[in-house]
Length: 537
Image (cartoon, rainbow, N blue to C red; front, top):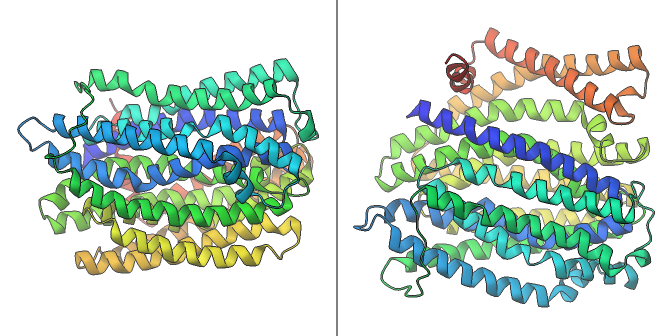
């Protein structure tokens, strides 16, 4: 079983990595198209495109996942193997998604106005125009999650992580088309009044088309997995009441998180056009999510079905083992990810920005996010424990706690100088998430009678010990590159930052793994076992 989890995780990570690479290419091209720091146009598009993305983030983080995987695992015990349940659940999901999408799209003027009340009428009008084209993504993001989670529940893991590749390819094609037709604006100097309807349609319309392709391609894999969908509006009699009860709490969690996200956007928009704002925060968050999405999501997605099975059979001891292993293995990578991203924050940011000042502004936001990477990924594991137990009530209250702390801190950030607002918001989120993770860990411990807390703490002490020489080696390499190739080499153009990040990353990885080997970390063997087995074939 452990080897199958490892192989599944490795396959998922491969798909996620390819998609993330293309995602970074897309974001870099977007930054060259409309700017990223101090660009009113970029912030207008960022706010509009963030509206459907916020909803998707909650769905991917648990709203549908919390319901689908455990319920489908149970439904496979039915005489029809779960076919009736899947048909009914997908039908009702599409109806709800369609209704939500229509309402949200009609409410675009209100959503943009509430999100950025400090904007000028011209910038607000541009944001609303973008939003009309972006909000239909809600339906396709939700459809993608439903189709993908059904495949995951059937232990068909690959398509869910490889489908975003289609999204990025279509989106990149749209951005290239925009540049060919209307020209690039890497410094973000294009006025909001210069945006004609055709520019808006090409930029925002191609983005939504890309999301639609990502979702619809999963129907092909449904066929190959032997799942044949037939719309079924007879929603009684297949246990959907239990799923609806679970979804009620997760919908409440969605509302709480959306409220906190709204406060973040409102505060960040104060600095729009002058300093790091919404677009910068989104770009920094994309970098922050790189190790989490490639490693944590891949490992935990493969573990989640196993957790659900153990929880459904009442195998508490095995479930505790799953939780401990998932936290420790993901932690090994996230500690490394934290120190690497801090060291390369400015070179990484320079790929998205036009000058050193913008790189520093974005890099500071990235560092503020990265200090919360380890608790963020641990929380992802702990949330799935609750979901495997069909408990979505507790995550709701945990989210209320996090949102309350973050909102209070975010409001305080509104009084900071414009160039510190985005950094303050990122730090506020990191702190709120850390507190939420600690509370969630205590509650999981009480629920399961422990999760090997002592073992987890000792493991993280090993990771921290290995990270110290790794960080020192990274900083030393950074300074050496500056001395040998020029002080601005790591942050100038594209080639310099790419070479710098590659060299620094390899050095830090080698030192980190070497240190873990020397201190005989058992997690190192667990993490690298699947890779060694595959390379040995």
